[in-house]
Image (cartoon, rainbow, N blue to C red; front, side, top):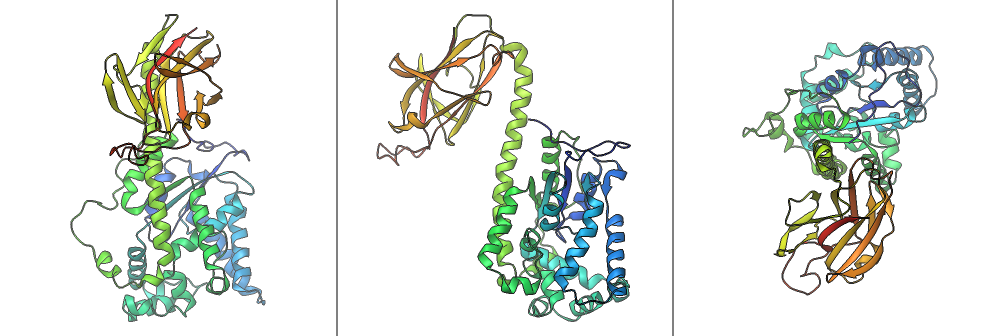
Length: 445
């Protein structure tokens, strides 16, 4: 597992090809805590902080106020984003302010990005934002944005359910209406823009951007998310972030209030955060698997080297592989089915720096045509096998070059076009998803 680039150290200039770590900060999704976690990894002078972005915002508002024009709200937003961009592009970390995906896309034209997003259960996010507005004193509105007082005052006057019924107001709409999906859009999504937009295309774009994001988590998993990011990036673990207790049995005021949020206010967000949860689970498994493999390989390299001209690895031995079902058969003819996923890996000791072969003995196939589209790779390079029959098995023989064997331990990856179960094929009641059954691996000249 290769750590991702973390940027320049203090006192160095940032190269244009170094990535910017960019946080998509959705309001009321733990952004301040998560920003603090990211900030620990970078020197202060390489961080585009809230202080710097507020200065850019104040300069923008001052300029707009001093130069009355017929610019639309969208045009003004575009000018503000350009001010942000001018500062961001010279930093290695962008955090703290509520930056959306469209700003990240603009920045990506100048520097590669590593993106982070933290989502939250949509109705709870709306309830939390509403309570936040109720807590803000009216006189706390910035002098350059006095209109914010109206939103603060409205939240104090109305219940959450009534507040959510005033979506004809642009400030309320901006606060609560599918805020998480809007922030993952490539467009600057104003109410006027959204009402004229193709809703399916809008959501599809946000979903595609979600898939592009490098690190996607949820507020309820924030401690775990930070630990896994540290593992993936090669950072020291952060320790507890002191956020939510995911195992608490008490219902918070935010959770109670969330029931008042109408479904239609967060319909896009519900679908998007469900997709984010699926992505997180897949990513978590991958990070943990890669970390375990890296640790295992480091410990095995010294022990795995073999000097024998040839040797067999059978499945009576411990399994040095990933994605296999349990042992079947009787010694010496023990075999394992690959599955439930399509890709399986085996870690095979070989003679260092000597050309040789790996032969894969395949005892059975869930589909007779499966092998024609199966791919074999050694340390990431695809190898075209030659086939033969031996010991009542189909044998796929793969050549290994002297260079490929230099470490004394290679990764054999086998990817099949499909998996199926005996029940799927009408062969029995077994519901396990499987593809090929392997009996042994032979390393030989």
